Length: 114
Length: 116
Image (spheres, rainbow over the protein chains, first blue to last red):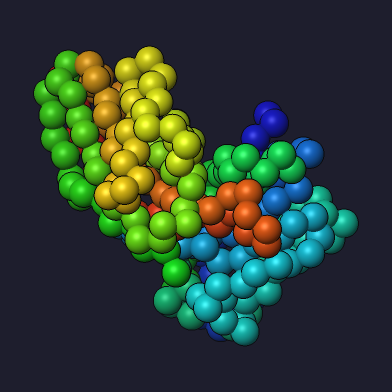
């Protein structure tokens, strides 16, 4: 499978715990994005990497959230001290270096904070 | 920032009929407009896109139109089939400009139901 891969697919955690999600983009894609999607809404932009550099973070990304993309390959999104409001689908997308704009999404990680 | 409005929020059609979903955007600098199909429990799947230098694009049963002056674009699905049932999202982005990060701003989605 050469698509965007996200793990885990589902995560249930207790409020206050830390969670980490992983995204493996399509190989050769240098742009990587994280989005958050709540029920009945479209995905909302969280952050963007070009290679290993994190170039933009949304206001939605509070200081409890951190994302990394070491060596410009896979990326991780960590949420510290989870809150019930963090419950959502976290989507990763990647785009090719050609800069044509197409973004390909993974299946997402569904986070439930109880 | 960019704002994308999408209508209708739900759409029910009979198999074989056509379906039309409309979106408007606010940022005149946006120049890339993709459409995504999302099935339950899955990530969005890119189905078609259009760029600002083109007015219409077709791919088999789906087509997109763009009116830059009015800042709106539409998705047309002809000869609908039950497997077309899903949530459809429009999005807008600015690509190619210096410093642009190509992030997508999405509409709120349209739940399309195709009844057999």
